[in-house]
Image (cartoon, rainbow, N blue to C red; front, side):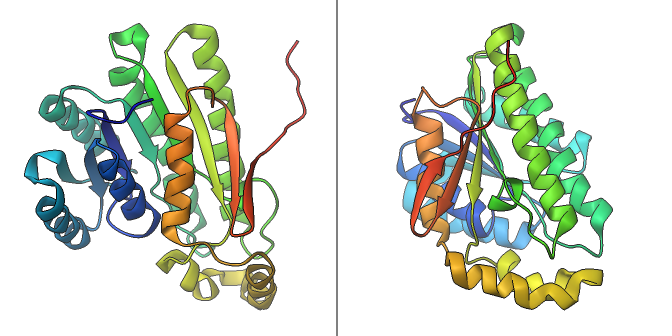
Length: 258
Protein backbone atom coordinates (compact mmCIF):
# COMPACT_ATOMS: atom_id res chain seq x y z
CA UNK A 1 0.00 0.00 0.00
CA UNK A 2 1.33 3.37 -1.07
CA UNK A 3 0.82 5.72 1.91
CA UNK A 4 0.67 9.02 0.08
CA UNK A 5 -2.76 10.58 0.67
CA UNK A 6 -3.98 7.63 2.74
CA UNK A 7 -5.98 8.32 5.91
CA UNK A 8 -4.89 6.70 9.15
CA UNK A 9 -6.30 6.58 12.67
CA UNK A 10 -3.95 5.85 15.58
CA UNK A 11 -5.23 5.18 19.12
CA UNK A 12 -2.98 5.97 22.05
CA UNK A 13 -1.27 8.34 19.63
CA UNK A 14 0.05 11.03 21.97
CA UNK A 15 3.04 9.25 23.52
CA UNK A 16 5.37 6.28 23.18
CA UNK A 17 4.79 3.80 20.37
CA UNK A 18 1.64 5.63 19.21
CA UNK A 19 3.55 8.87 18.76
CA UNK A 20 6.28 7.09 16.76
CA UNK A 21 3.63 5.39 14.60
CA UNK A 22 1.94 8.74 13.95
CA UNK A 23 5.25 10.31 12.93
CA UNK A 24 6.28 7.52 10.55
CA UNK A 25 2.86 7.52 8.84
CA UNK A 26 3.05 11.31 8.34
CA UNK A 27 6.63 11.06 7.07
CA UNK A 28 5.40 8.63 4.42
CA UNK A 29 2.60 10.90 3.21
CA UNK A 30 -0.47 9.80 5.17
CA UNK A 31 -2.96 12.03 6.97
CA UNK A 32 -3.39 10.98 10.59
CA UNK A 33 -6.12 11.29 13.20
CA UNK A 34 -4.51 11.11 16.64
CA UNK A 35 -6.82 9.59 19.26
CA UNK A 36 -5.83 9.71 22.93
CA UNK A 37 -7.28 10.29 26.40
CA UNK A 38 -4.27 12.46 27.24
CA UNK A 39 -5.46 15.81 25.90
CA UNK A 40 -2.41 17.80 27.00
CA UNK A 41 0.08 15.46 25.32
CA UNK A 42 -2.16 15.07 22.27
CA UNK A 43 -2.56 18.79 21.68
CA UNK A 44 1.12 19.51 22.20
CA UNK A 45 2.07 16.75 19.72
CA UNK A 46 -0.42 18.11 17.18
CA UNK A 47 1.15 21.56 17.56
CA UNK A 48 4.62 20.18 16.88
CA UNK A 49 3.37 18.18 13.89
CA UNK A 50 1.53 21.22 12.47
CA UNK A 51 4.84 23.08 12.28
CA UNK A 52 6.43 20.22 10.43
CA UNK A 53 3.62 19.01 8.15
CA UNK A 54 0.97 21.75 8.13
CA UNK A 55 -2.33 21.85 10.05
CA UNK A 56 -4.36 19.96 7.49
CA UNK A 57 -2.38 16.70 7.77
CA UNK A 58 -3.47 15.81 11.33
CA UNK A 59 -6.47 15.86 13.61
CA UNK A 60 -6.35 15.39 17.39
CA UNK A 61 -9.42 13.85 19.00
CA UNK A 62 -9.75 13.29 22.72
CA UNK A 63 -11.00 9.71 22.82
CA UNK A 64 -11.21 6.88 25.32
CA UNK A 65 -11.14 3.44 23.64
CA UNK A 66 -13.42 2.17 26.42
CA UNK A 67 -16.24 4.37 25.08
CA UNK A 68 -18.17 3.13 22.04
CA UNK A 69 -19.69 6.60 21.68
CA UNK A 70 -16.34 8.42 21.67
CA UNK A 71 -14.70 6.03 19.19
CA UNK A 72 -17.70 6.14 16.89
CA UNK A 73 -17.67 9.95 16.95
CA UNK A 74 -13.88 10.08 16.38
CA UNK A 75 -14.07 7.78 13.35
CA UNK A 76 -16.98 9.77 11.92
CA UNK A 77 -15.09 13.03 12.41
CA UNK A 78 -12.00 11.56 10.75
CA UNK A 79 -14.02 10.33 7.76
CA UNK A 80 -15.86 13.67 7.44
CA UNK A 81 -12.66 15.66 7.74
CA UNK A 82 -10.31 13.59 5.57
CA UNK A 83 -12.73 11.64 3.36
CA UNK A 84 -12.67 8.08 4.69
CA UNK A 85 -10.37 5.75 6.64
CA UNK A 86 -7.72 3.47 5.07
CA UNK A 87 -5.57 2.48 8.05
CA UNK A 88 -6.34 1.83 11.72
CA UNK A 89 -3.62 1.28 14.32
CA UNK A 90 -5.26 -0.06 17.49
CA UNK A 91 -2.37 0.89 19.72
CA UNK A 92 -3.84 2.17 23.00
CA UNK A 93 -2.87 -0.12 25.86
CA UNK A 94 -1.96 -0.27 29.54
CA UNK A 95 -0.11 -2.66 31.82
CA UNK A 96 -1.53 -2.80 35.32
CA UNK A 97 -2.10 -6.10 37.11
CA UNK A 98 -3.82 -4.30 40.01
CA UNK A 99 -6.66 -2.98 37.83
CA UNK A 100 -6.96 -6.10 35.73
CA UNK A 101 -10.53 -5.52 34.51
CA UNK A 102 -9.46 -2.16 33.09
CA UNK A 103 -6.45 -3.82 31.44
CA UNK A 104 -8.79 -6.27 29.68
CA UNK A 105 -11.19 -3.44 28.81
CA UNK A 106 -8.53 -1.26 27.15
CA UNK A 107 -6.13 -3.84 25.72
CA UNK A 108 -8.59 -6.36 24.33
CA UNK A 109 -12.16 -5.02 24.35
CA UNK A 110 -10.88 -1.66 23.06
CA UNK A 111 -9.18 -3.38 20.10
CA UNK A 112 -12.31 -5.36 19.24
CA UNK A 113 -14.57 -2.31 19.59
CA UNK A 114 -12.22 -0.14 17.51
CA UNK A 115 -11.97 -2.78 14.80
CA UNK A 116 -15.73 -3.31 14.45
CA UNK A 117 -16.46 0.42 14.35
CA UNK A 118 -13.66 1.06 11.84
CA UNK A 119 -14.98 -1.67 9.55
CA UNK A 120 -18.19 0.34 9.16
CA UNK A 121 -16.01 2.88 7.31
CA UNK A 122 -13.36 0.59 5.80
CA UNK A 123 -15.03 -2.65 4.72
CA UNK A 124 -15.87 -2.94 1.03
CA UNK A 125 -19.12 -4.61 2.13
CA UNK A 126 -20.24 -1.33 3.72
CA UNK A 127 -19.02 0.95 0.92
CA UNK A 128 -15.45 1.49 2.19
CA UNK A 129 -12.24 1.30 0.19
CA UNK A 130 -10.70 -1.57 2.16
CA UNK A 131 -7.36 -1.02 3.86
CA UNK A 132 -5.36 -2.39 6.74
CA UNK A 133 -5.76 -2.69 10.52
CA UNK A 134 -2.67 -3.23 12.67
CA UNK A 135 -3.13 -4.14 16.33
CA UNK A 136 -0.31 -3.54 18.79
CA UNK A 137 0.17 -6.81 20.66
CA UNK A 138 3.42 -7.82 22.38
CA UNK A 139 5.88 -10.65 22.76
CA UNK A 140 3.64 -11.35 25.80
CA UNK A 141 0.99 -12.33 23.24
CA UNK A 142 3.17 -15.24 22.13
CA UNK A 143 4.68 -16.41 25.40
CA UNK A 144 3.94 -15.76 29.06
CA UNK A 145 5.24 -12.72 30.90
CA UNK A 146 5.17 -14.34 34.34
CA UNK A 147 4.72 -11.12 36.33
CA UNK A 148 1.78 -9.99 34.18
CA UNK A 149 -0.75 -12.80 33.63
CA UNK A 150 -3.61 -10.48 32.66
CA UNK A 151 -1.48 -8.36 30.33
CA UNK A 152 -0.28 -11.66 28.80
CA UNK A 153 -3.88 -12.84 28.37
CA UNK A 154 -4.98 -9.60 26.67
CA UNK A 155 -2.11 -9.69 24.20
CA UNK A 156 -2.73 -13.37 23.39
CA UNK A 157 -6.34 -12.31 22.82
CA UNK A 158 -5.29 -9.50 20.48
CA UNK A 159 -3.24 -11.90 18.35
CA UNK A 160 -6.04 -14.48 18.22
CA UNK A 161 -8.61 -11.83 17.31
CA UNK A 162 -6.32 -10.36 14.63
CA UNK A 163 -5.69 -13.71 12.96
CA UNK A 164 -9.37 -14.71 13.03
CA UNK A 165 -10.41 -11.33 11.58
CA UNK A 166 -7.82 -11.68 8.79
CA UNK A 167 -9.31 -15.04 7.84
CA UNK A 168 -12.88 -13.70 8.15
CA UNK A 169 -11.99 -10.71 5.96
CA UNK A 170 -10.51 -12.92 3.24
CA UNK A 171 -13.52 -15.25 3.31
CA UNK A 172 -16.08 -12.40 3.37
CA UNK A 173 -14.47 -9.89 1.00
CA UNK A 174 -13.98 -6.96 3.42
CA UNK A 175 -10.87 -5.93 1.49
CA UNK A 176 -9.16 -5.21 4.83
CA UNK A 177 -5.90 -6.84 5.95
CA UNK A 178 -5.27 -7.49 9.65
CA UNK A 179 -1.87 -7.84 11.32
CA UNK A 180 -0.49 -7.90 14.86
CA UNK A 181 2.69 -6.09 15.87
CA UNK A 182 4.50 -7.97 18.67
CA UNK A 183 7.41 -5.96 20.07
CA UNK A 184 9.61 -7.10 22.94
CA UNK A 185 10.41 -4.59 25.68
CA UNK A 186 10.19 -1.00 24.43
CA UNK A 187 11.60 2.14 26.04
CA UNK A 188 8.30 3.80 27.05
CA UNK A 189 6.54 4.98 30.20
CA UNK A 190 4.65 1.68 30.20
CA UNK A 191 7.95 -0.18 30.44
CA UNK A 192 9.58 2.01 33.10
CA UNK A 193 6.55 1.79 35.41
CA UNK A 194 6.16 -2.03 35.21
CA UNK A 195 7.57 -2.70 38.71
CA UNK A 196 4.93 -0.48 40.37
CA UNK A 197 2.04 -2.07 38.42
CA UNK A 198 2.47 -5.75 39.26
CA UNK A 199 0.18 -5.95 42.31
CA UNK A 200 0.15 -9.47 43.73
CA UNK A 201 3.02 -10.40 41.37
CA UNK A 202 5.38 -7.63 42.51
CA UNK A 203 7.73 -10.26 43.98
CA UNK A 204 8.41 -11.27 40.35
CA UNK A 205 9.67 -7.83 39.28
CA UNK A 206 13.27 -9.08 39.20
CA UNK A 207 12.37 -11.89 36.83
CA UNK A 208 10.86 -9.33 34.44
CA UNK A 209 14.00 -7.20 34.69
CA UNK A 210 16.16 -10.24 33.84
CA UNK A 211 14.01 -10.90 30.79
CA UNK A 212 14.43 -7.30 29.67
CA UNK A 213 18.21 -7.62 30.07
CA UNK A 214 18.17 -10.85 28.06
CA UNK A 215 16.10 -9.53 25.16
CA UNK A 216 17.24 -5.90 25.20
CA UNK A 217 15.12 -2.79 24.81
CA UNK A 218 13.68 -1.47 21.56
CA UNK A 219 13.26 2.20 20.70
CA UNK A 220 9.78 3.37 19.70
CA UNK A 221 11.04 4.22 16.21
CA UNK A 222 12.22 0.63 15.65
CA UNK A 223 8.71 -0.54 16.50
CA UNK A 224 7.17 2.06 14.17
CA UNK A 225 9.38 0.90 11.28
CA UNK A 226 8.07 -2.63 11.73
CA UNK A 227 4.51 -1.32 11.72
CA UNK A 228 5.24 0.41 8.42
CA UNK A 229 6.15 -2.96 6.90
CA UNK A 230 2.82 -4.47 8.03
CA UNK A 231 0.91 -1.52 6.56
CA UNK A 232 2.69 -1.20 3.22
CA UNK A 233 3.33 -4.85 2.30
CA UNK A 234 0.09 -6.02 0.63
CA UNK A 235 1.06 -9.69 1.09
CA UNK A 236 0.88 -9.44 4.89
CA UNK A 237 -2.45 -10.57 6.32
CA UNK A 238 -3.05 -12.48 9.55
CA UNK A 239 0.59 -12.04 10.58
CA UNK A 240 2.08 -11.77 14.05
CA UNK A 241 5.34 -9.84 13.60
CA UNK A 242 7.77 -10.39 16.45
CA UNK A 243 10.25 -7.55 16.89
CA UNK A 244 13.37 -7.65 19.08
CA UNK A 245 16.51 -5.46 19.06
CA UNK A 246 18.39 -8.46 17.61
CA UNK A 247 15.99 -8.85 14.71
CA UNK A 248 12.41 -9.52 13.66
CA UNK A 249 10.45 -12.46 12.32
CA UNK A 250 6.97 -13.51 11.29
CA UNK A 251 5.62 -16.13 13.65
CA UNK A 252 4.54 -19.53 12.31
CA UNK A 253 1.47 -21.05 13.93
CA UNK A 254 0.04 -24.58 13.64
CA UNK A 255 -2.64 -24.73 10.95
CA UNK A 256 -6.16 -25.88 11.77
CA UNK A 257 -7.81 -24.94 8.48
CA UNK A 258 -9.31 -27.68 6.37
